[in-house]
Image 1 (cartoon, one colour):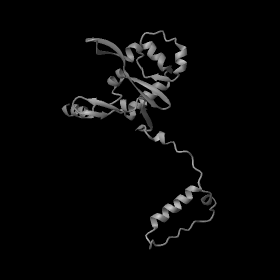
Image 2 (cartoon, one colour):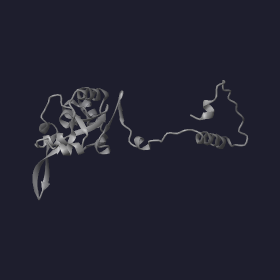
Image 3 (cartoon, one colour):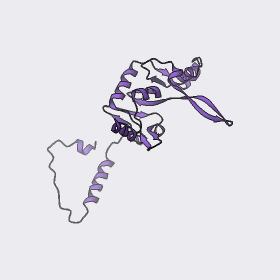
Image 4 (cartoon, one colour):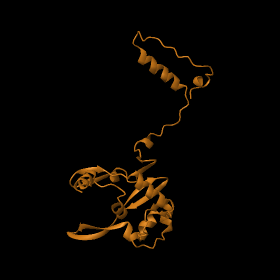
Amino acid sequence: MNSHIADITDDVVVHGRPDREGHGLYNFYSILIALLRNTLLQEIPVDLYFSLPFIAGEYSYKFSLGFFAEFGICDQHGDYARKLTEAKLIEVIEWCQSATPINWVRATDIAYGKPGDNWEAYERQNAEVRIYNPRNIPLPDLILIDTNMMHDGKEVTTKSLAFDSIDTAGMIIWIPYLYEIEEGIINSCPKCEKKDIEQV
């Protein structure tokens, strides 16, 4: 706060004068800049405003992979924004608050059949996640999916990661595609959903 303004103790009476010379905007900026010169300012964290979180009721959330996860692609209607409803987000948050956190690298190691004991690597990559898993499905069946791809002219099947990661309520939460589809946690194409409703 400006020290001159802070020192005002009496009732303030505002006076004005007609802008006969047409300098009103200049005078306003001149006074504003003079006040700002004498004001203690905090550093403005501009980077925090580059990508604002989504809002669902009282909660906010961000997709950990940003733009790459924020949009889905419908073969018929093109790109659409992916989002969680307030009810689904609350359901996920409430379940995950009592879930045991796990190191994210360890979780993927276990899913791929490794022992999950590479503690040196886990210390280097020490972020913990909570995995939404109300049915307690084993990690290999939960966060991996079979993906077909071409290799040396042959189609091969490989295991790919199958979850969305969101930052919300002070947690990093993995939401497996399995639950997203079964429980409708993240929307699909809204035009297709509307068409399905109209056909019912």
